[in-house]
Structures are given as structure tokens and as C-alpha cells.
Image 1 (spheres, rainbow, N blue to C red):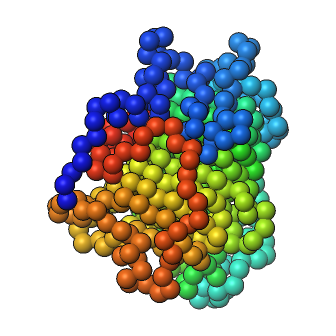
Image 2: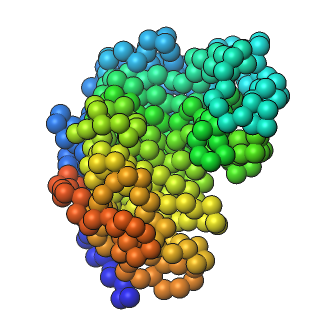
Image 3: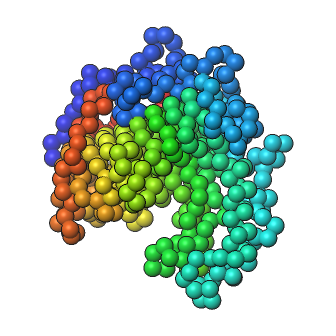
Length: 440
């Protein structure tokens, strides 16, 4: 195909709007903590917009370098911090480990386990050959559940409304979940977030034909919240990949859940300029297939993100009107499953996205039908192996190889976009250069 070249003015406009630190260069290096979501920048700009903790007074501006310091800055008590609505800005400087005890020692999974729990005993008790394919119950399963409660108290960090968390250069958080639950008007930016590992995954023998292990912790989880901006972060499993885990009960022992999940009636969320690296269940939007409180919610914009070696859920959507544009999908190896999961009553609008597909992966693999009926797709470009890039309809490819067909009209057109939508052919260069932590 003929490659379209974006003018320098168009690229500059995109960066000025979507990368506020560039736009404010005349004032010196902008204070990321005081920045707010630009006008019209996706669904999170709807209603009152997203300002996070930008209005914080000096007494509520913190720099932290430990789990204990982060909990203190968020209000002082991890169990109740989710209700602390005082505007606050928190700068993360250095490395924070969710397994760090208050005295600075690093805990192991064994330190969080209930005394009655051990994995070896669990595997023996609930082995499919003897227990069968029914849900675990009894003393060992109860001990596992108590262990999960202990880990949650340690590694799930609860964030309250009107909060901005921003990383200083090189800042990382690992082994924890940033939980945005009932915390509207929240901003999380410029962090490298890794390895929210579950020490005590659940065995779900009725999940699929042979059962599956399911984990409990996301890197960022957004629940029951509105006006949330997640921008310029890097998400990964670090050196603890699910693909390297052992096989237990005949199935891969999965210790990670989502990278960025948006569920439980959340809405008005913008995820921009993030880098998702080698993660499996990357982004789930919508809690379940049950028609209920999620209907009319889950309005999310996903733009200018890099999905690098990600396997599935890029995103998987239920119910929500989800705008997916100018994202760069770079698959690696045969682990790729699908990108866009078209779920129950979902309305995905996908425009000018770029897919770098390995070897002979066909474009019909981009879409997976999870009970939906339609997806709007415009301007997709793919490049497979070392072949030339081509304009592609992933929807046409899917419908040619699957029944029933998905419709081509999701029923809405996005209007909240802060900058120009780039031609898909320019997405790899721009997103590859600017997405992720340390690139603002």
C-alpha cells in the first residue's frame, strides 16, 4: 500500500495536546503532579473532567519511596484510605515493593500464608484424579481463602478520590495492586508497574474443559469510579512471566490477572500512551455477562498505547462504549490469542490501529466474539512477518472464517478526542517513541 506521511504540524499538534509536559515547556519542566487531563481527551474528559489531586495544598503533596510511605500519603490506613477524598499529589521516587513490611523487611508468600495452608497439600487434596472436576471445598480451600485475605491486606493499595500519583524518573512499583475503588477523579502517570503476583491462585476446575488457575490481583484495578486517567505507564510481569510458571493439576499455574482492568460499573476512563509488555489477560472492561448495573456504564477511551507481546484482552469489552484508536499492537510468538474481545452488548469503535503480526498469523485472529453482535472498525493496517504493510479489515477477515457474522456498526461515533487521529501507518513510529513511563 502507499504509505501516508503525517505532516510535521499534525504530529506537533498531537504531542502538544496529548503530552502536556511538551505543551508547557515554555514554563520550564512542567510539574506532572499539577497537570490535569486535557480537554476532550477521551471519555475521562466528560462531565467535570479529570483533575486528580491538582488542587492539593502544600500539606498534601508527598514524595514516597516505600510501601509504608505510600500508604501514609494516601491517608495513613490502607483499610480506610479509599474514602480519603482530600486532594493529594503523591510522587513516587525510587522503587516500592508491595511485599515490604512496615519495618522494611521483604515478605515472602510463605509469610502471608495461613498456618493451615500449603500448596503441596492443596494440590494433593484437590487433584482432579481423586477430587474430580468440582470446586474445592473444605479446610484447605478455606485456608487458601484466608491466605488471600492476608495478602490483600498487604499488597492491595487502596486509593481515594481526588488523587494524583506520578512517578519521578525511573520510579517503579512492584508486587502490588493499585486499587481505584470508589475513587473518582484519579490520575496515575509515569510509573513502571510490575508483577502483581498472586501467592494463592484459585483452582477453578469448571473453568474450561480441563479447569484453570485464576489469580486475584491486577496491576491497576478501576472499580466503581468515574473520571480516571491512566497515562504514560509501563505494565509488565517483570521477570516472573506466566509462561514460565509450572504445570499444576494439568494446567498452567497462572499467578497474574489483569494489567489494567475497568469493572464494577466504572465509567469515564481514559487510558493513553501506556506500554503493556508480555502480559496475558491485559485489559478487561466489564465485570460479567449479567445484564445489570454495568449497562450504560464502562465508557472508556484507549488511545496511543503499545501492546507489546500481549496475549489477549486488548481489550475485552462488555456493555461499554469503548473508543480504541491509534494503538500499536506488536505480537510475538505463537502465544497471541486475540486483541479485541467483542462481549455482551459491547460497542467497540476501533479506528486507525496498527498490528505487527508474527509469521503467518492471520488478521481474523484480531477479533474474538464473546457474545457481542457488532464492532465498528476503520483504518486498520497490518504487517505480517517481513511482508509489506496493508490496509486490512479484521472484521471482514473474522466474518469470512467464523459464524455467526459480527455486524459493522457498533451504534455510536466518538467525539471526545483531544488531538488529531493519526494515519495508522504513522502509529508505530509515534507510539513506539512516546508510549510508556519515562517518555513525558
